Structures are given as structure tokens and as C-alpha cells.
Amino acid sequence: MAKLIIKKYGNPVLRKKAEAVIEINDGIKKLASDMLETMYSAPGIGLAAPQVGISLRLCVIDVDPNKKSPVVAINPEIISGENKITAEEGCLSLPGFYENVKRFEKIAVSYTDLNDEKQKITAQGFFAKVVQHEIDHLDAKLFIDYLPDWKRKSIEKKIKRKKKAGDW
Image (cartoon, rainbow, N blue to C red):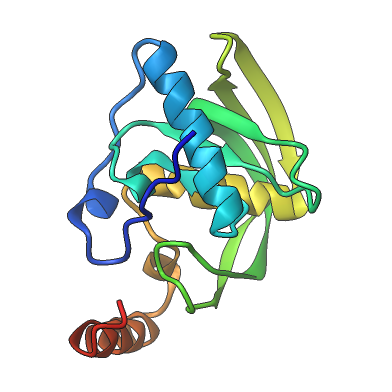
């Protein structure tokens, strides 16, 4: 396993729609393993391949505080969603920034697992929020895109200052 570098806001890979994974091979399995290691050490609860510079539709999630329930979702798709709620979000690609975002409270998701088997799950609450956040990364969308323009621009200004100071 190898720890990967998490790309920060401003990196073009975060704004590129990810390509579908065509074949689940040893390279994809290693990428998933490396992404889990990277996510756990960040520490985080979700990580999408574009966040480590690889534009593929793959994400890893583990909302278990004991880090014992990893989900590797390949080519995930949200089938349905219900009951929008607002909750605070952050992102490993935007370290230090947290804002309230409105998302579905309950979703149905389909994806392929590392054994090349189709899965369909229902996610609720916090887990549903994380799944939506990671799938957004695959679609080149970041949580700040849900914010009012003035709030997003304020965050972008702060990031510019951090870049200038060498803190980004």
C-alpha cells in the first residue's frame, strides 16, 4: 500500500468529470487499497479517485469510527433520493473549510464492488451525505458549488491568500 497525495482545490483534475472504470484489475484493486490508506491517514471518511489525481469513477468510504466498514464503490450512481436535509460538510481537497450543504437524507445507490459484482444499497443520514459528496467528486462537483455565490467567492479569496502565503 502507498499513501497518495490529495489534490487541493484549484487542481484541474477536481473539475474534470471522471471516466468509467472499464475493468476491475489488479491496478484498480491497488488504487482502491492505496486510497483507503490515504483516506484513513488524512484522516477522512471518504475519498474519490479524482482527489488523488486519477480521473476514474471510483470512491472509497468508511464512516465507521473504528475504520472497519470500508466501501469501495466503482462506477456508483444514485438511483433515487428523498427528504433533503442540511448538514455541515468538509472536504479533504478543501482542508479547513466547513459549510452547511443541503442533500438527500436517504438515497438508493448502485455500484460495482472489487469482486466485479453489482451492488444496490440504501444509504441514510450521515452515510448518505458522504456517498453523495464522493459521487459529486466523480462528476467534477465540489461542496462549495452548493453555496451562495458570495460565500463561495469568500472561500475562494481565503484560498488565494493561503496559496500566496504558501499555506495551500
